[in-house]
Image 1 (tube, one colour):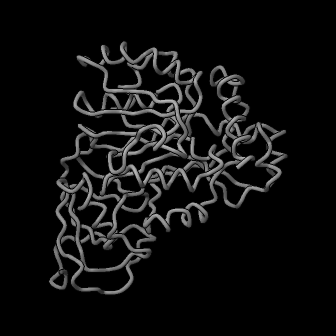
Image 2 (image 1 turned 180 degrees about the horizontal axis):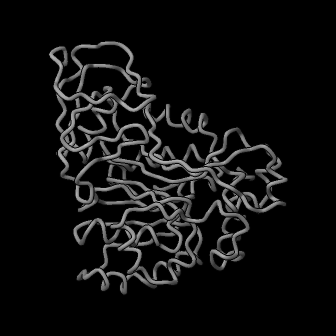
Length: 349
């Protein structure tokens, strides 16, 4: 744990003292991607400039259908995503941001009242806590209390990622969702690179290896992880490129559900899902992940896990699922886009 404490102190120093704004970054790994919805872009236009200039991220981990939700933002920093979420959950929703760096929290907290007024709220629906994402209980986050956990390029900075995910699934409600963007590597990072404070602070040498990530979640009862988006990361710094050698990095947006009904393989029960087109901002289609795009009104054959994700979560009212798990037809190939069906076959459950 001594190395872990040292790492946390190093990250606090990097984000609290070394970096003053985005221009101080030495790579583009922690630069927020521009691929976000028009709705989110509209909200960003009403976020105070100081919040935006001091925010670091590698994606846009904000899913749809958030009205009234309680959301937890891990490593909220100056609060950019937390304030976007504040608008999207509405006045009846709640957003909790947690971060270990006081300098970042100071920025987030001084805009609480002004952002609430911009959104037309009678009182703020955001709060920012000082704490560690490895120990959410110490910050007062209760079991089964959160609808959605988000994080933007932060989990890679934790020296105890297994503890982070264990805490996430402790606080999520049944059917709740973890939706996060982070840096992933195509192999395990060597120890000497993990000790490089610049590489670590730039979100590279703490990057998750995808297979290790999958293994971390298995003991937590999470058997199926979905990639929503991914994009390669170019470091654009010759000195740091030389250090990392042949390691390839990419930014991924991941969604995981807290569902006890999921299996570790995609199984075929003859189920069919149809999207009703009723999720605000998504009238024509809904993207569950990078190989499940459901068109409005068009039935799609789905595996049991996909059916559960659409039926047993906050998305349930927006889908019609035909069939159950009473009859099993073997393995389902979820590795490619699921087949569409124009009519419900007679052999479906």
